[in-house]
Structures are given as structure tokens and as C-alpha cells.
Image 1 (cartoon, helix red, strand yellow):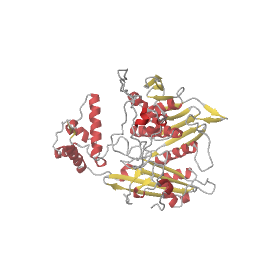
Image 2: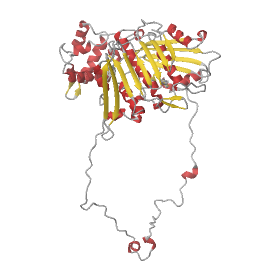
Image 3: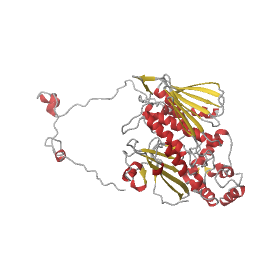
Image 4: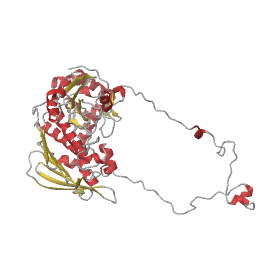
Length: 523
């Protein structure tokens, strides 16, 4: 697909013509002053002006202080928080839901239980509860430390829902940013009910966090609620996110916040066959039961593959492990590090890898560094040896959503099952497996004349379409669908999901995914 239009610039020729009164290199400069208009002025008659003396001449001086601004403030203003999450304040309710659903799904999968998640929304907040193991105390404490980034995903290369490392931090301060007086975060987990209030010292501009904990009977799982004061106008419920109304729907071409929330819920139900999702939205209830509670995918706690790492990724992981060991006062061996990769848990394979790079079993991980940083050649040799003694992960191991599940969800959304179409691309490219699945259906005569796109990656639904650039064409999903006669005013539902261990994002908020050209081949 190539663009047929070219941008043309029209330049007014009159603007480029020299003005007869303009300065030019040959023109005589004229200095017009009041003094110069009097013939008797000595400075004017001599053509010289006495320069003014701007020196201090012994007066007081200012010794400027070098001030340090805390990085905590990256989470305590609307502008900085918008930069952190990559979404405008009017979309923050969607951010709250997406991040909490992602965290709940990951927690349940790591615990080996089929996720059961309940979402509740009312005039004063949004709540998300799950049946996972519960957020431990140490995680909550680290979330409230705004000077560090905390993530169990960021340094690894794997197909996970999120690796940003600041999701819960942004949710902790978001209630304060939108409602400084009443905003708070409630966390109920592991026998504790915590009320967290974040604020900012107006003088020092430092974070002020109050966390009150009381005993709780909730077990198992975690319940998190973002809360603010109730607001209304002319009988309409308003949330403090640029006064969005969370209960109104719209029949026009644009989507209300409530309709976008419904699309987000549909996305999570579409991309997770094992999920049971129950929603209570201002008293209106909706449930999507799991179509396959035993559905398997690549879990967040599965070993990662050495074939997914390039040199810079492996260095990042090694450095993160060394830093963590220093904080804990421990020392990890190279053998223990190698054992954490897919296909290298057996002692014999680990020995072959270490022998190939001439490292002993007990040597610490710091042997891969020296006073100048990483020993690049040795790191490359280790990566090469790990790849040599393992096989690339097949695409099917990532997890395939499948035609049957998507058909059920499309039918529940009011689509005509006779019009349903499904496509799958799966393969391995440069050691990186991928599964790209799409589904399409017409919604019928009574549906609104507008297209609904549900897109996501690694089993997480996106707030906006993240596929804004396909390969070398530079065009995104909307343009491609329009070319296929599935424009914005067509009553269709289209879903697109990509499973991939190393997603490439085009923005800081990780809301735009770059898709390269791939060949179609089944595996």
C-alpha cells in the first residue's frame, strides 16, 4: 500500500522579494535617536556614543544554588503521569482497568489457578478483585517508593502482558492527581486492608505517603480500589477525569467512555479463554464465563529462551541480577544463571555450556564483568553456547487462542456466526516465535453503522489500536481495513492479537507496536 498523495507547498513569491527599505550589506546603517536630532549634542555630532558600564563595581552578588528535584514528582502531576502511561487524563479510567486486569491475570496464572476477576464501578471509584495468591507486603512497600522502578518483568525477554515497571505506582498517585483532597487507593490482600493516600509537600515538592493498615478477612486474592469523591451535574454522574460520564452511551460516530470500557472488557474475554470475568457497572451486570478453564499458554513464571535475547538484552539481565544480589548481600553463580533458561535446567546441558566458554561451575556471575563494565566477548560466547545447546521455542508453545473460543465470544457480542471468519499466522523468525490471530464478522442489519476494533498483544487488550504501522508500508490497521472495504462506518467487529516474546514499541507509554513484514507459514 503506497500513498498516492504528495504534500505540496505554495510559497508566495512576494514574501521572497527583497524590500527596498530592508537592510542589506551595502546599505548605510541609520541610528535614529532623540539626541541625534539636535545639532548641538556632542555625541551626535561626533558620531560616537559613550557605552554604559554594566559591571557591578563591588555591589552584592548572587551565588546560585544547584537545586535537586526529586524524581518522585514524575508521578505527582497530570503532565508527568500522562507521560508515564502514554494516555490522556480522559482515558485514565481505561488505564486503571487495563493495569489491574493485567496484574490479576498474571497473579492467577503464576499461582496455577484459572482466573476469576470481578470489576465494580460506581460514582466514587473502580474496584478489581481476583482469586490469586495476593500481593505480598514487600511488593506494596516497593510500589510506594517512587524513587525506584520495581518490576519482575522488565529485565526479561518473554511474552508477558506488561514490563513497564511502574503500573501500580501510577495507580497509587492517580487518585491524588485527579482529586487531591479525597483521592486514595485501597488494597485488600494477605490479611491486610490498606488505605493509601499519596500527596506532595507544597514546599519541598517531595512525596508524602500515608498508609493505614487494618486486619482483613479476605482470602485468597487481592482487591484494589481507586477512589475519589462523588460528583454530578444535572443528574449526570461525573468522574474527575476531565468530567467524563461513565454511564452514558452514544449513537454517533465517536465512542463514549462506557462503550470503550465495554470494548476493553470484550478484549480481555476474547484473548483469555481461561478467564471468568464478572462486571458490575453502576448496577448493570455482565459476565463472560471461561470457555476453557484449563487453557494453556506461556506463563509469566516459565523460563525464558536464550534465543529471545540479543547481546544488549542479556547484559541487561545479567546487570539486574548482579544489582539484586548486591542489595541482598548474596552472590549468584553463572551456573545458576544459565539454569534459569528454557532447555538448560538439566545439569548435563549446563556443564556443556560452561565448558564451552571455559567457566567453572562455582564461578560467580560477576565473572562476566570487569572494572570497565561487561566482558563483551565472554557474554557473547555464553549467549552463543546457550543457543547452541537448546532449540528455539515453537510458536504453539506460546499459546493459541483458537477459532472456537473467538467464535463463542463474537456470537455473544451479537455477531452473525455465519459471517464469522478466522485467520492464524504462526512461525519462528530469527529464533523468535509468533502467533498472529485475527477474527472478523458482520454484526447484522440492526447494528450501529460503525466499526469496532479489538486489538491486543500477549493476552492483554489494548486501550487504543496499537497496530499503527505494518512493516514497510507505514500504514496501520485502520487504513488496511478501510482498503478491504471494512471502513469506520461499517457494522463489523474485528479482533487482532499477537503473541510474541519481544514486542517492539514505538512510544514510551507502550501503546504502539511496530509490526515487521513476516511470511505466512503455519506451524
